Image 1 (cartoon, helix red, strand yellow):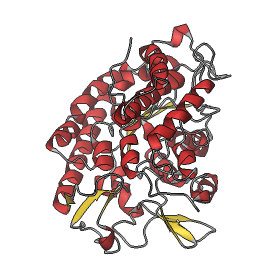
Image 2 (cartoon, one colour):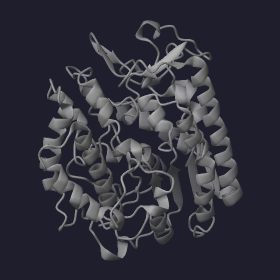
Image 3 (cartoon, rainbow, N blue to C red):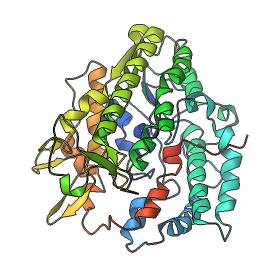
Image 4 (cartoon, one colour):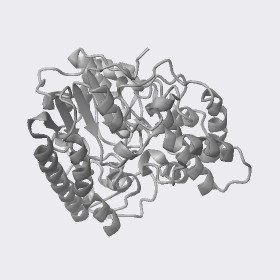
Length: 432
């Protein structure tokens, strides 16, 4: 059993990109392949990760494999109601008191010091009861599932045995209490970037939200300044380059134009409404906004933490794997002669395109997470270590079983599912 009082080698806090979400789902098959766990394994360090025996509330991939799910959200409701039997509120959910990877899908920057299991426990119970009520509209049903997913995720990840002493402990509180030698942080995407990538929302309001990230990080930096001395190293990830996001695609007729360092004439969200055309110039400007936010973030955290902080520059490392803009680029999988790229998974005879991300075109597959882990290892000064891409591919239960998967069904409802808590960061007001 991992005790809360243990002093771990390494911990991780942040959002879905560190929790190991794939296809909008928190899956038992993915927890051992998250970025932090792959980093810890490469370093020979122990990291105790969440150990769910069932998917958290739903498994989108499993639902899609059933085929013909035109009313996808309604099908998910039934799956969620059945799944809740695996999460009894009066019993512990794990043998471990605490996990070393406590990233939570949907978390925002302030979530790192505001979110606790106490904040969401009563809400999770209330939402579980609401979900079983008949007559909910489609949007209300989707919102309830999303709110419940986020609430349940916080309760499980931050306090898996419902311990009174742990109930008010936020992710940062747990870092201060448990004092890991290395702290990994990935946060900030849910302040507008993810919704821009998923919904194609490049509005002025979204840009303003993204530009507010440095101000929010100043509050985080002030808290990190007083980390215990045992926390020797903090690695902070930059935000991904917007044009790399697989869900933001050109018109299908232009997908093989490969503009390289230039931009396609227009982009749009592959899941959802392709009528929301985003000009290449608008995309270039958004890339510039994120680059500026990343630079400010590094300056703020460096001023607070000095040499204790290092930066995993995800933005700068994107082009090497960008098969959307550059022909032939991607993740080369040794032994099988396959290269995965950042296009949506698209079945073709004898195989498929894409593979960097799962079915939501946002969250990476195991090989995609392996690439991000390499960037973190380099930031730690261990660029000599590399994750095993062949093993990562073999471990990915989606990529090794794409055949027959109906990927182009229920797109409107899949877009609605994208508004779940994975992306909106617990937008609903929590119950104290």
